Image (cartoon, rainbow, N blue to C red; front, side, top):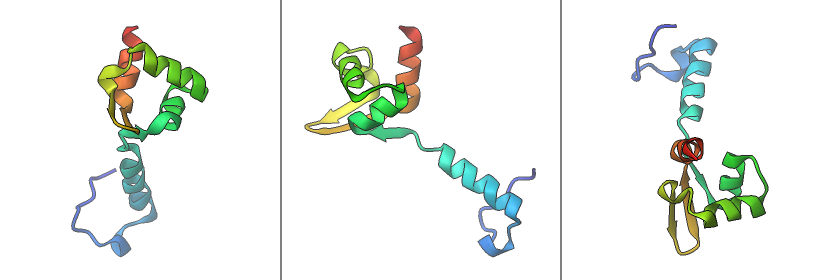
Length: 83
């Protein structure tokens, strides 16, 4: 599929081009938020996610300011692979 020009009007795109652009936008989500987000990344329960966070294995992937938690998905998965 050829690359879509960013200046192209949405109305001028084919359905195929629109779906391709939509997939690219959705796949670029790099962060998850909170303990629910961590559990979603790990595919486990909230209690297991809390234990993993407390263990320190994922410290490089987690940014926390008081009760706000931001997790870098790619880095968290890399750190788990290293373990």
